Length: 353
Image 1 (cartoon, rainbow, N blue to C red):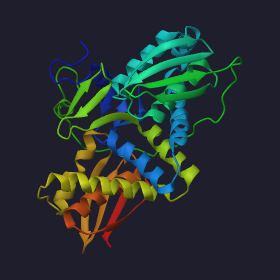
Image 2 (cartoon, helix red, strand yellow; image 1 turned 180 degrees about the vertical axis):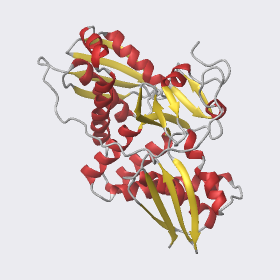
Image 3 (cartoon, rainbow, N blue to C red; image 1 turned 45 degrees about the horizontal axis):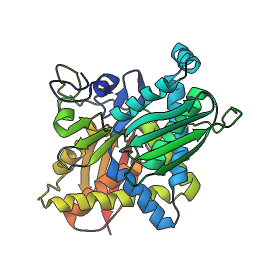
């Protein structure tokens, strides 16, 4: 059975991930590898907004950043004897299995069209979460499995199908530009999730999300928004690459883009919201199930809010998440700042302007 008969969660997702008390979702086989359930609209909105603000497309930066992180992930996955077997027996079936993995994460449904070992891979993806990002995911997997770099090209057909082609040429040259990432320390927490008695995933996961493995899509039931499951390493590497290529103002730009998006979503609901310190704590509690972090405290000094979030997945996006709530509940503009999570947590300060 592909889905848990009790809660409806993808059985692959439930068996391969673990929800810990600190606001983290980790891979069962590698607890150091964090994953997040991220609103796909937020990701698309960031890429489109940055492109509009700088007047340049960011597709190539996104593709190459995801390629590096995908290769890093696959190198870790295919370590030891598993890697020896997979690489020695590399075939279209290996990539079909990787396609199944993409589907379980809500990234789209991928299948192989043509393949020749160490030479080329051609595939198509229906319902891709983001064209340049998933092209980078696939090319990074090719680089790792084949042990060499390939040139990737992609295009989207009018019906929304993504076509990806990777060509290693006549010579299989070793790749360079290795991915590097320093994992911030993890702060323990005390969150308790009610688990499904059958698949052991949090009960709230099945309550809030629906899973369609055939389409490679995960939908948040309440909003109808698509969500994707993406590694924190990949996400932070992607945003760091944008900052390296486009300038140090990118993190602040990402915070503002997310702040405006969150504010608009909250205001569109037309509900009265609790803007007390307790209200912020309830609001930040929504981070935990998605592996985005663990809201610890919120306090006001006059009109200035200070909030602490342990294990944040990306500090500027956490700041935008909190500042968007602030603006929606106060009706005032704001500026937000944050501390780096070098000690495992960030402190976000939001004040009116």
